[in-house]
Amino acid sequence: MSTCAAEYVAIGDLTQHLSHLINLICGLDITPQPVIQCNNEEAILITNDNTSRKRTKYLTRAFFFVNDLIRQEKIQLKWVKTKEQLADILTKFLSPATHNRFMERLNL
Image 1 (tube, rainbow, N blue to C red):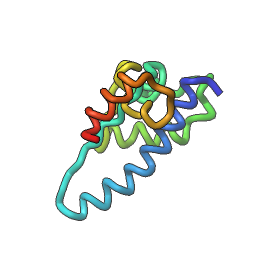
Image 2 (cartoon, rainbow, N blue to C red; image 1 turned 90 degrees about the vertical axis):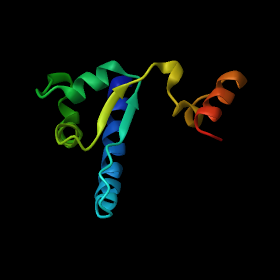
Image 3 (cartoon, rainbow, N blue to C red; image 1 turned 60 degrees about the vertical axis):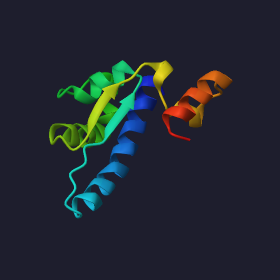
Image 4 (cartoon, rainbow, N blue to C red; image 1 turned 180 degrees about the vertical axis):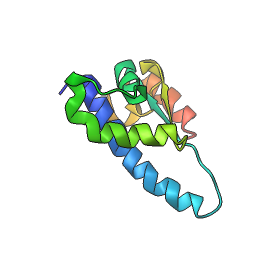
């Protein structure tokens, strides 16, 4: 699986979980619009593209689910520089300086 496809699948999984949380929170008369930050530009292009691409055909189910929530403005997808990807604190080995900077940004 390519990096783009892996990022895209992760966006799809996250979006499914967010969809349940959004529905729960909307029951409290709060209208959240979570922002998903992704550092893979190709994954973002595929998500925001309304046409099917031949080489990502196997991702269509996740595509339509994510794309629908974006068009309904229930979620936002935003590109973020790799150096600023906060999720990396949970998935990558970081230098002490980067780790401390991310911890501060997370208020931890």
